[in-house]
Length: 379
Image: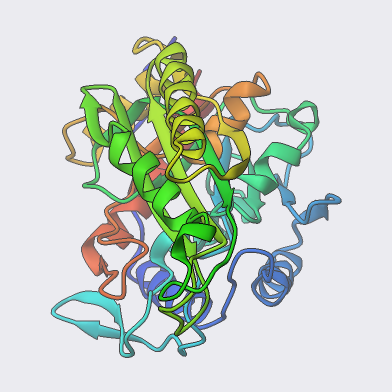
């Protein structure tokens, strides 16, 4: 294989276009399940480039940025259109200390619109025939357990592998492993009674839930495994004089070792049953366990990872392999047999009201994208 010539860096006009497009996309609300408005805007942009696309039943958009049909796409680039809830607060992107933030107290949406904007600007260059052709996949409902990517038919792809820009850590990090994740929902059902007159006639669902939680191993269990109870809800609103007849807890566990994740969630289920059967509680129990995504571990010598390392190095970033405690569309594709690599894109504090991305990180990812297209076209 001959060495590819250096990829041409982004121009000043492209960087200006990138920042403007990013701010525009962030300002369009697109909470998971409500991506229609931002998807429509993306479609208008693709149509303006003469790029063909189609939308599957789940709402995922697949475009082939290829002005020359005789050239196969070298790679898939993937980002998701949805965001976590914004609380109904308007998103007003503003520049603060050379970085994009929301002027209001809510998310910015850089997760994942920083990636969407970068890939669309790269599509503009590729559509002119000035960069290698690629496939562009924009998914929906990633923030709700990868729902869009799980429904996407990977057999429609012509690319040999792909990249997902969806890890809110410094540029240069390459995710080589991600955990298997289980969600547990437990509903304890007791019996209501007057708490001041005949508490002995009641069966407290809150007490049962509390004992279950207290007996669970939570937090970081080992280097590969975590467990958490994230929500508890029970009793009657503003009522302290009623023994709580119902209480629900939501919990999770995730591990890079799938068998360990399975063992931990089974242990959490046992703790719930133990608490429900405690004579002081004696509650009925409905419990549901869902495996929301399956983990993966990439070979560090895969062509996709090696190409990413070369692209990062060409742009001045030292490649670093990391394992993630979270998931991205990469997890769904791995289960379905299509190899994608998740790259960190420099966003900060995703899912938080202080979410931010620096202009430098945004523009660097555009240069890295051009380098990736160059590297993968040469394979």
